[in-house]
Picture (cartoon, helix red, strand yellow):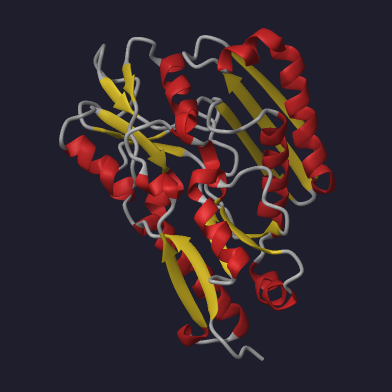
Length: 309
């Protein structure tokens, strides 16, 4: 019997709060509980506070999770809700990525002001993005474009577009769908030409290992196919570093008990790329991801990875 409110930790952005609310609503439906059985606890992370530098220069993925993980350890929250692509591949001892909700559309979305697509932008136009993967893929498609750093949450980036700091930007379609902002999308990037970041579109829940009550509550809302896909993608990312200093794309798709995976690594300027495709059973998900990452390490060679710095 649930006797006290389950505390759901989240970043304080509108998108993060929407993801926490979705988690709460799924828990309510799964257990027949009311809103008073849950408390959403917004926390500000270091990554939210730093807006003027690339993540690669200030610490990478952990910047969006550390404060939430600290709150898990000291009991201020019971679970932490994350965008899965923000989660480090190695979590602090005592914590685990216990649950994944059904994945949203993993594609990237282009929001253009001068043209509806990257292909149609005039020569020398400016596109803003904070993601090294997106920057490299843009440069691969259009080496003539001026690509600049675009930090901030969804609303901040849209304001920068309105202020004409850039002529277009790329955001995750999943986030725009969760914020009911799909009407601003001018082009959806195809998976084969613009593959997503590992974990993109999936909400991940982090909790304390061995917390039986939390495990019991979370079990009914875990989406096994998304869990298998993320096990593969996170294993791939772990082999290749995946610290926000590296342009890496990876996407696993699950049908029944079969899993197919596509991975891509790029140079920062997009001029060099190496790709891999693998498939197998969902039981082999993590092994498939590791093998794909090891293959790309061998194919690209030491020089390629040294250039990443």
